[in-house]
Length: 217
Image 1 (cartoon, rainbow, N blue to C red):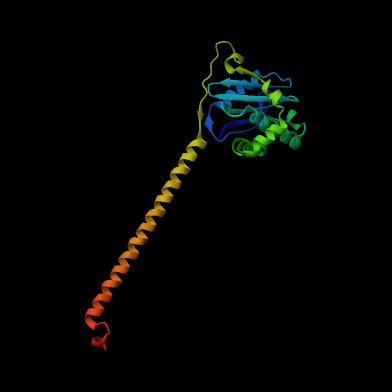
Image 2: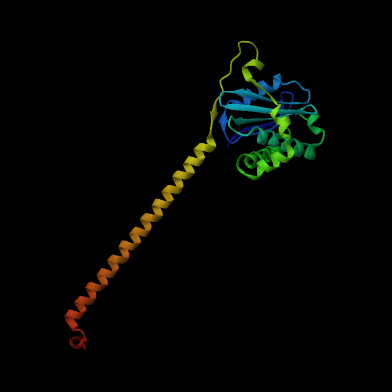
């Protein structure tokens, strides 16, 4: 999944978050949230093969972590979609509620929209409509290490569980196909064996009784 992690926060207080993967990027994201100015803006932080895109709007921060080759337009389209859904659901409550209080509900929305913007071709059309291409192109990009304290370094770890799950599903599918193929092969061998047995029985009966069964009547 190109969108690896999504979060809605107020300052460094996480209100809701979701990821299908494991790693330390949630902790790294919290360190980034501490550095983000609480004025309306859009920006991208880069680190290794990943981008952290964020939008601050009305004191709330909407952030996602993506693989570096994932479309910037789609990433900000996702953030805009999440922002609109969050506001439509909670209004201004995000400005006052305790950290984590919206996670049980809104994490499901994050999961659904992350999957949609990552995998559905129609998501790019929505992103084109919602995002001003020129505006997205002007989004500032900066390396994370410049944002952190001088000399502070991070090690970003991502375990792509989804990739492992996909591999496992592929192996399971191959195993099922092989199992079905062996079942049909066994069925054919059994059918052939039964046919040969019936022919042998018929030959024996004909040998004993004759073709017209005259010797057995």
